[in-house]
Length: 238
Image (cartoon, rainbow, N blue to C red):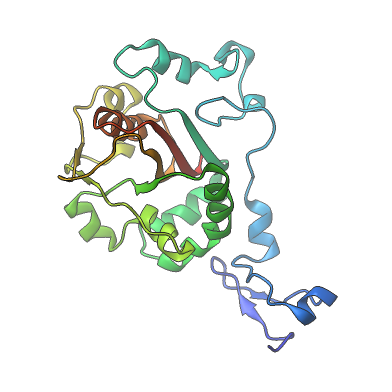
């Protein structure tokens, strides 16, 4: 290995000079996908967060917090139609302007290699959750054709996991164009692949962004109805 070989940041394409240490002389260190400047723009979620959605409480006024839940999750849990389906969402980063642009490049401009930015975090988090099935939120056929790949499944693939693609999606208008109320009151947008045996399974849904939680709860509701024991989610951004 050439210790002084430069590599490029996957986002801004600046050269990354590897840090030379005694450890690097005797072991292959994990490649860093981002330069220090880009990495510094990512804001990890830390501190006290909502028990269900991982929303940081320090970003909320006290009136939008109800004990260990944010106000949005309280509303979901008070609605008998949606109560208890999503046990927990785990998110890594705040959806700030930098991450918004990075995900746009990854998701809408076909920059598949950016999935590498999130691989190590996903591996560590999945190892602590130990689910029976990893289920990426699916795209409709039309949306998959537009984007070229499923951004949720891509991270799993690069991390070396098998995706349980047991959900299909009915094509509809983009979620980003809908209000919170419109998202909540959507008819079921997912269908279960036939012969999927879910009885007693612990499922981890995989998606890129937790916004209102509607997409994840629609999927969780369908999977719970098919016999799954518990549903958690793992998302890049919150």
